[in-house]
Image (cartoon, rainbow, N blue to C red; front, side, top):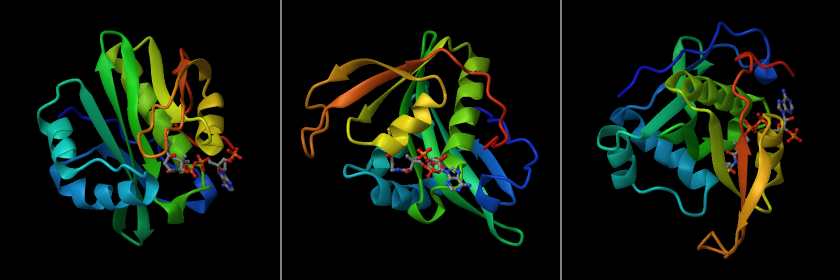
Length: 178
Ligand SMILES: CC(C)(COP(=O)(O)OP(=O)(O)OC[C@H]1O[C@@H](n2cnc3c(N)ncnc32)[C@H](O)[C@@H]1OP(=O)(O)O)[C@@H](O)C(=O)NCCC(=O)NCCS
């Protein structure tokens, strides 16, 4: 698996979160990531998918975001992934543990992902997002993503449409600027 960038030294931002790091996901992270996944999505990925993505899919890149939940104890509170295909990063997943939302952590993670993808040569980033998921859409809009299409009935659990969003902007400061 590739090396992932560490987040820059943290200013007192991101809702007061002090220590913070972003790194490549390892197999050891899977139980914790699956717990966050099942709290975040109606159709969480099974363990076999995580194992495949981490160790067998050369296009897949998965990141975890850790915070210093207690002094000197880092805990994974979010994760994100993308498939790098030719010159495009297709964002496959992104979630923050419910207890840690609303502090700018998804923004930190998304920026690290975009930066890493740009370093690999990505010229665009694309994703699908539920039509009703305005929190995620606002996050993406703040990073230059615009709706370029719609996939009707894309989500199998409730037949909700997906909006297809794309950005060509990759150069954001890693620090939370809110
Ligand atoms: C979407 C998701 C990743 C956002 O995570 P998050 O860490 O809460 O996101 P952020 O904190 O970066 O931004 C979300 C909101 O919190 C606000 N926020 C950010 N920092 C904040 C702070 N310090 N204090 C209060 N609010 C803050 C942001 O302004 C934003 O609100 P807005 O959309 O009204 O502007 C999270 O809600 C999640 O995991 N959802 C379930 C999975 C999902 O939908 N993933 C996306 C699939 S496409």
